[in-house]
Structures are given as C-alpha cells and as structure tokens.
Amino acid sequence: MVGAILVAFVCLQVSLVLGACPHIITRAQWGARHPTSTPTHLAGAVHYAFIHHSAGAECHDRASCQAQVKGFQNYHMDTHGWSDIGYTFIIGGDGSVFEGRGWNVVGAHTLGYNSVGYGFCFIGTFTSHLPTAAAQQAVKDLIACGVTEGKIQHNYVLRGHRDVGSTECPGTAFWHHIKTWPHY
Image (cartoon, rainbow, N blue to C red; front, side, top):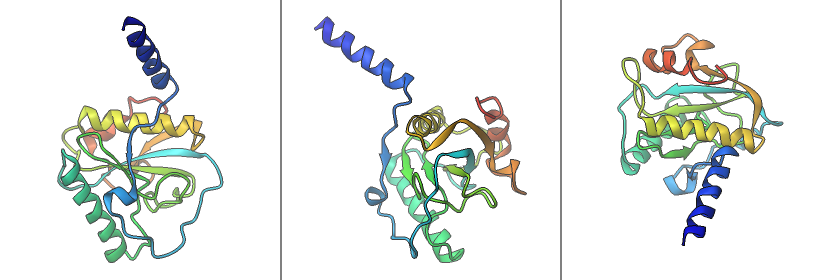
C-alpha cells in the first residue's frame, strides 16, 4: 500500500513539474455553436498570453459558468458578427476551464495580437478584487500546459488586455496582481 501511495505521489509531482494540462471542458461538452466560417490556424507556438475578464457577473459552478460562456459566444457572434467566441479559453470561479476557440486557432480577443497570442478570459469583473485562487491556478496550469505542449513559446510574454489596448480589462486589481506573475 505504501508503495502504491509513493508511486502516485511521484507521478503527481512529475505531472506538476512538466506542466500537466488541467481538465478542459470541450466545445461539445459546453454546447458551443459551430463557427460561421472555417477557423484560421496558427503557424506555431505563440509569444503572448493575454489575460482578460468578462466584465460581468462571476460564476462559481459549472452550470452557471457554462451558461455565461454560451452567452459570450452568442454576444460575440450575434452582436459583433464574429465567426465564433473570441477567447481561446474561459475560466470560471470554480477553476473550470472552457475551450473557446482552443489551441492552434486565431482568436478575436486582443486587437492586433490575435495571431501571436492566446486570450484567457476570467468570468467576472476584477476591478476591486481578484478572481478565486482556483481560477488563477487553472490559468497558470493551462499556460504551463501550453508551454509543455508547444502551443506557447517557453519565453512567452504575459500581459493584461489593457497593456496593448484602450480598455480596463482585466480589471485594475487583477492587472496589478498579474504584474507579479512570471513572464510579465
């Protein structure tokens, strides 16, 4: 029994060190609409990881987060006329990670940088407080996964949306916080 526990512990440590990917709720699992046009694929690993917030209500369980993700896709497609949801991945307060456009696809999240970066959107408004620890850990794990899987360059640059555009995104409190993260 002790040997099995030790093996499990070592496997856990190895997966954490190597950037094991968090569970991702696929487009099919959250009920995404099909894009209205063929997605443009990225040529290789991107240089930027952009942090966004949705600037709306927070969610703390899969059902409410999933409903919001569907709402984002509807808004992006029906109001903006985009071919799909703009974000690469969307993170809920419970740490759920929803596939937006996903790896290897050009997004519509950071004007002028969509073909060189991924957009990670936190559900909620973070002007005066931070997202949950679970949500923050999920995106850190997701970015580490992207590096390990060759989707994000190992020397990537982390930025908040406001660093490259005229916006308050990802919220003042959160923006100040991500400036303490590696790669900022």
